Length: 251
Ligand code: SF4
Image 1 (spheres, rainbow, N blue to C red):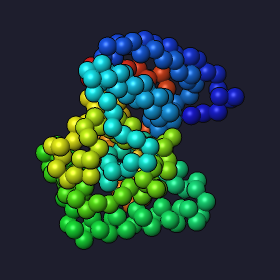
Image 2 (image 1 turned 90 degrees about the horizontal axis):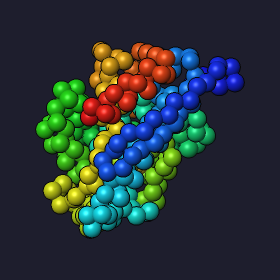
Image 3 (image 1 turned 90 degrees about the vertical axis):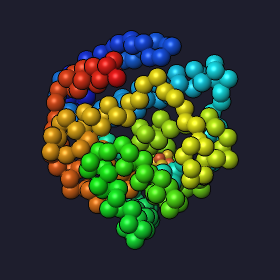
């Protein structure tokens, strides 16, 4: 976002009914045009609040969250990220010290190689390009079977926890953790959320770039660097927030 010292800011506050709770929020924005990725900290904050509501509702139904610190069993899944998140994650990698970057880049390259050798990369690209749910589900199972740890997973914990994708924030399970490494997705019960923010951000990313889809697999962000850095449309922050709220209330 533009430097707040140089551009005047205004504060937007709202209250929305999400599931069984009222979600109140306020956000400081400038009058300058911004990109969706500039607003990601705000979208992350809203996602975390919606997840909190989902957890509370699950607990009221007698369920409890099985996810614990140090358990990264679900971090071998195909993780979708919006173009906006892909762009910020690229910047995050580029801001890392050279040695660390090398390690992370090597993990990405290794996973891509395994996916390619197993014929899953092509299937994945096709499913994403067709935006076909059934195909994506099938590819997701094949991807998980390869047991490829996310390049950001360290000692079974997310090394970019504060910046992790919205889809990772939204994925919590209420079933026995013993099933989390199971390749049969039917045995895992994921937390049901009153709203999901990630698809809204995929849609908003797509709307700003008609030529491309709004999301991509996390594992492909490095090879998509050029595409992620180009066609970055910008709009006044207030318009993006309005679009977001409209999507949130319609969803
Ligand atoms: S980004 Fe973090 S939470 Fe998401 S899959 Fe990777 S290690 Fe897991």
